[in-house]
Image 1 (cartoon, one colour):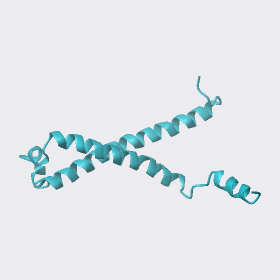
Image 2 (cartoon, helix red, strand yellow):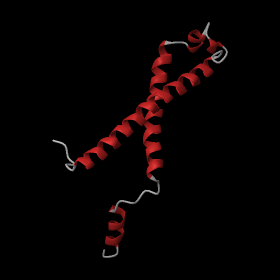
Image 3 (cartoon, one colour):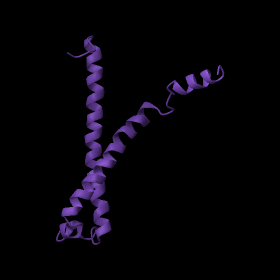
Length: 108
């Protein structure tokens, strides 16, 4: 029993992540935006046909088949949800930095 205690303690201690802050930030931004873009793509293309959307526009050659339209739509949604996630992360980081400068650190 005495030999089991150190193993249990080691397993209970939080492990340091080998990722740098920049890599974590990229993962924090890209993964939720990827999932949101996937859901948005499913809902959007359940209603609209990408080939019909592209008819008569400069995108007609790009969305000549459905798969190309779905891919283009997905990357469009992913770009905008990535911008949204990045802005949220930026605002959260700058707000905590401003709170630290004011000396209070905690909000009411």
